[in-house]
Amino acid sequence: SALTSALGHRFPATDEGAMAAVANPPALGEKIQKLSVSDAAREVDPDDGYVDTRSRNQRWLEFTLMCLCNVAWTIDASLLPMFFTEFQVLFHVSQTELSLL
Image 1 (cartoon, helix red, strand yellow):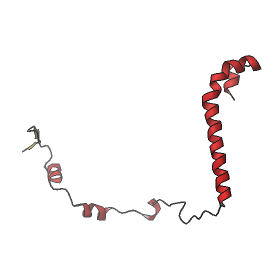
Image 2 (cartoon, one colour):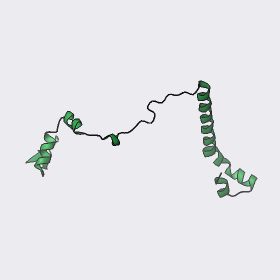
Image 3 (cartoon, rainbow, N blue to C red):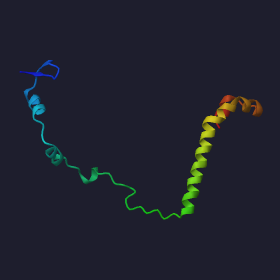
Image 4 (cartoon, rainbow, N blue to C red):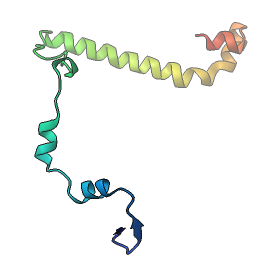
């Protein structure tokens, strides 16, 4: 027997069992019922039951500090390399020593 695609191409059937499985797939409910997940394999949510007890001022302080850290990181990663030549001359250091900042 042969399998015919939607475009009319014929494919030889090499495994009758595989052909039957493709033609008659099991119902979705049967697949789900056969799955078994052990308790050890389940992921535990570390935030389950967490209640944020920080004050509003504390949260704003932490947010502001994180924004300042982001600005500092951006300056360090983007703007500092633009001035490496001037810093090398000013501080009399090599490119390697300056990049270790």
